[in-house]
Image 1 (cartoon, rainbow, N blue to C red):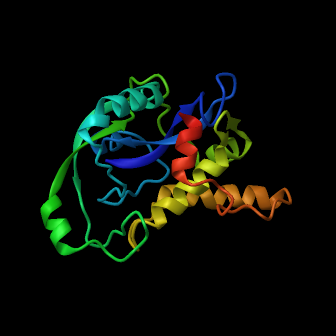
Image 2: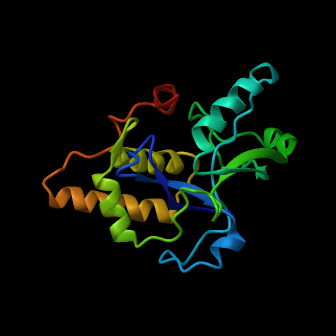
Image 3: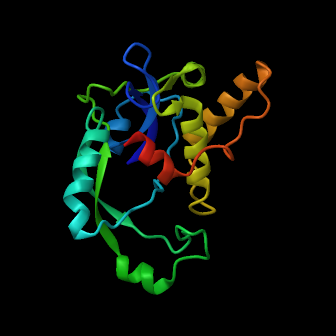
Length: 200
């Protein structure tokens, strides 16, 4: 799989009249059939996996279905724990024992498929950045989402940055700077758990 900003957002980072843009995971074999201006993709897609207690699983699944089902389809995929990854508290690397125990976790993900109603396919990067800068929805500014995603990905590991996301973030910063907006950053963006509660 790989990560691309090829999905619209009508209910979080945009509106039905003016949808924003959000990332989705795309199956690599499908991506290889597309014409993508970000033609290179790393062999590994970094992310975070969460273990949900059995007593909370049904409630969480219902929440995720409501949140994600408009533009995504559910699939299971192996998730490999990296010894270079940091813990949620930002402490040192996960132990080798934890990595060995985890192995490949059978993980539920929501990915973009061509027949999903919000799936767009490849976008011109500069036009995409312009769209992101201009879009906003009930959950906030589209550009905040992008910059927060970039920060979160870079914080997973020294190797976890995403070239596609970072390129778009850089383009957005340049657009904002050209308009005299010089204080854009992610320090003011609420923590993910707070944002999740807002979007829920």
